[in-house]
Amino acid sequence: MALCQRGLPPLASCVRAFLLEGAGYMPSNNDKIPSTVSRVHRKIHRIADKIEADSGGKKAICKKCGNLFEQIWIEEYNDYTDFDMCEECRTRNYKGTQKAVIPYEPHWGQKLVHESKARFKLLNCGTRWGKDRCMTNEYIMRFVEMLNEDRGPDLVPAVYGWIIAPTYTMARQNWRELLTFFPRQWITNYWVSDRMISTVNDGIIEVRSADDPEALVGVGLDIVLITEAARIKYFDQVWINIENRLMSPGRGPKGKGGIGLINSSPRGRNFFYTMYKWGQKDDPDYDPEWESWRFTSYDNPYIDRNWLERAKKRYPERIFRQEIMAEFLAEGNSVFPTAKDCATYTGSDEPEPGEEYIIGYDPAKSIDNSGVVVRNSKGQAVRVEQWKGKDWTYQFDTIAYLSQKYNNARVILDKTGLGETIPEQLTLRGLEVEAIFFSNQIKEQLVNNLAMLIEQKIIVYPNYEPLINELLDYEYSITESGLIRYHSSTARKHDDLVTAMMLAFKNFIISEVTIPWIVKVGNVKRSDVVA
Image 1: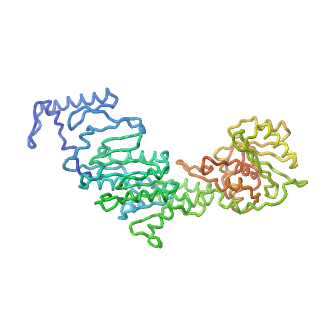
Image 2: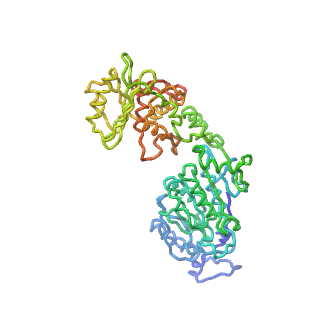
Image 3: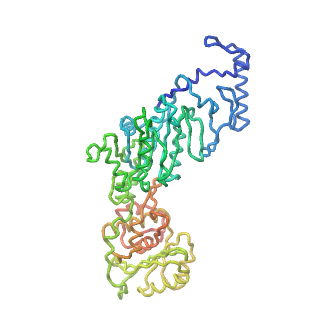
């Protein structure tokens, strides 16, 4: 993709004045450079190369003014910049133009976005569609167009843009893509710690976090890119602040208002869903300044189809529909959205003679919560307990008591990060113990099985508030490598009761529809297979 930047001459027309001065000769526009100058040019060029090599790339000679200058260290790439001019010469406005080619070839869906004339563009996409790549390059093209405008001295900086992510951690990829695709010769300086660059013709781009909406105020903006918008907490408040910045006088193309670019994968029907409807012509909330698109992962012509088919078999249906098909589902990222529907058990917690019971146990040190669930062969969780601040002796003795009470119930526990000590202690107390190590694959199987049981209302459990809250709080996210990660939605909440439920119902039903590939796994010991 080619861009044209007004303000810099073609590189081929740039003559190193300091090289010619060193030869004692300054030609006019029509003069030819004599051979003696060419020899001096080559000699000084070798000197410049030697300076760069001896300094490890830190120092260079400006090809425009001949002054020695220092390159900028880019921590992200563990290397120095490769500017061929000093900052002063890079920032100076010249007559003429300079072209740059961005290494980006949009696919058919990305072309639709680039061809749109809408002021506000919103992308709702399945994972791996290429939404960040598309929006980053759209951002660069629009930013460069505004750099080419004749702007008066009242706008400081002349062109100002933000790229916003839910957190600074998530903003790393946007920072990398900005450095990769923004033409290097048009960047005049970097501030790596602040994730900010300055450009020719007085442009500034900052990468920001939406952690604190109140920090996104106070300045006028020409353009903003908001990535993974559906994951931003209080996104409605964030957008109000941003839209006010885009309405600042003189900002945006030809001073007619700033540009907004928004992308995300869906996360339920939150404010991102509301904004999506603003760009749909058949929706009552349609705004003619907006255009929005929905693309599935299948719409990327370059994506691995085999991976998509594996994901279709492995992911629970609601996850596949949201993460791959980009559907706006009412329950969002919740793993157990209908948890309250199964909280109907009101029977006795006393054991029945001859009944078989299983105890799911998530042990924890005294500073954390431990979870215990006792269920029978009918799919009823008859007892749910949560302990906090209990030492190991108390926990072991209580589990032994519950096992004996419930007809010598077998105990299934999570030993991840705890080693063999706990299983051994329970075995010494005469208990039948199955200790599970939570690998990613094992955890995914256990979660899927419990989700299916709750979704189809096959099991019941007491309406115990800590359990219901944990189930409703439990959610999933998709990693950059395409794996599913399960966790509580906030760091302050716990999942000990969810884990105890998964363990208690581990062998209750074999979920062949959810995990059909499990029977194809070879060379696995029987004790390692999750039924």
